[in-house]
Length: 242
Image 1 (tube, rainbow, N blue to C red):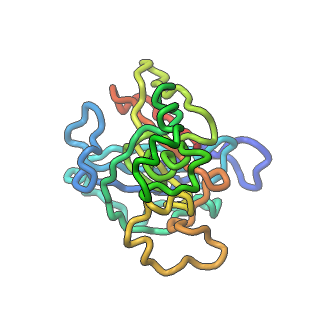
Image 2: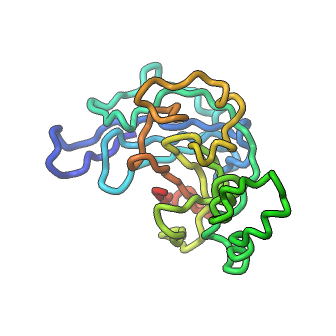
Image 3: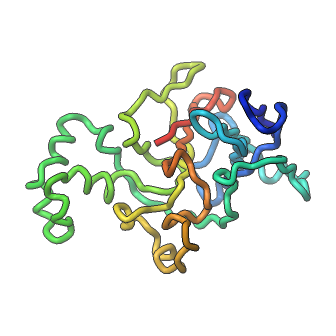
């Protein structure tokens, strides 16, 4: 799949350029991964442009049937130039199902007040770090609500902006979170989400942020959240940086 190079003062000629594979997900690993109206599609391939764009990486989604997709290229096309921030380090998928709750900013005002009331957390005793007494909502955000790192589905994470409408530009239907592509899997504030295998891994090389296993960098360390329309995969997906 090709992506047109954006116009501007670029040191390379304009025209189509091969996109980079970012993720390949199978329904047998992630059972909820089913596109609307396509019961035979059990494979999702995510690609993006290897060059920087003003707002966020440009992505493309391809839904396929793994059984029917037998014509596989031995040597996929490679772009002639790549922004190193968008070149993923190959990683194997080890899915882990976790329970999430809506982000604090997605809660009703009443629930926000309850979450921000430290007295409600004190009943949990030592299970809640007392350092969060001045901002209990941060404990909820970091430890309980939305998991960090790469994930399929789940709730949307906020912080760079307040929640924004996520509606299909074609039919106006509310869109569903599909995939979060993260710079890092977890941080010091969210290390309680780190899988046991990650915590036992050898440290990354000097200069590489902790838990930046894929080596990609999105918007100076944020995440790219992809949303799809539940009505049709023919409708454009949404790209959101948070």
